[in-house]
Length: 308
Image (cartoon, helix red, strand yellow):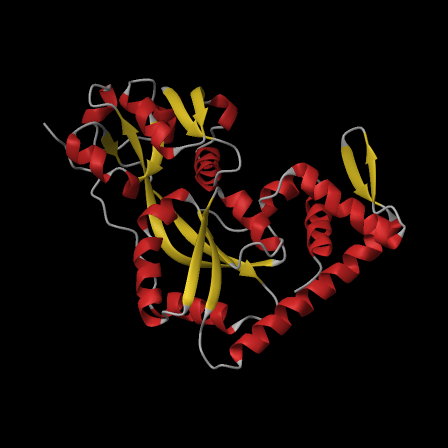
């Protein structure tokens, strides 16, 4: 309902990047630039200063951003309130989730929710935790399930369930016969890790720091942005890794990988994040209540399974 130019400007202003705004809005960068230029021409005012590849808001841009946030919030509230006059829980529910949650937790949850509220259209975005937080902050997503607590001050965070992380290695690796492995022992081996911005990476880095090991102290063989790529690298004998135990069921059954618990165990809470606003749509509140009434559970996975 709100002016598209205003929506695009708001996203650029929050990200201070035309490139990031284009990614969040699923637009090309030239299209984003064109929309902002049109808004500047409409107001006959420059909204951004562009210097040395960086952008900042001008005084006019600061004022426009304040009004844009109020206008967009009121527009969303109006559309939601009018839609709720039917008394039905319906409409699009924009959900973001990290890969682990999206593949192992959400399908069952969304299936149950859809069965109870068939008029709801759930739309899932899979990305790392940082990206999901940004999309929620910019109103691109309604709610997110991520692998670490939120760092955004305007986002509310609630723990929805727990997930255990374990060390994985190839069956031929010396660690394959151990009953547990410490952070110090992991640090002595070539290590395959996740990329910066990953919720899993953040949790693992914090675990190492608690053991007195800095991330730079690790013998990092490679950093990969995909859980499947990490499992493939470990299976090929390129190093060991730490992953969610729920993501390696198939590999353990086939004997392609071995999982060894960490000592002390590494159990992380998976977090539910959403905007901490006074107004909340009936659909979003219904989904939140649904999750609280029946907390989701990741599939249990024994880390002591061994295949011959």
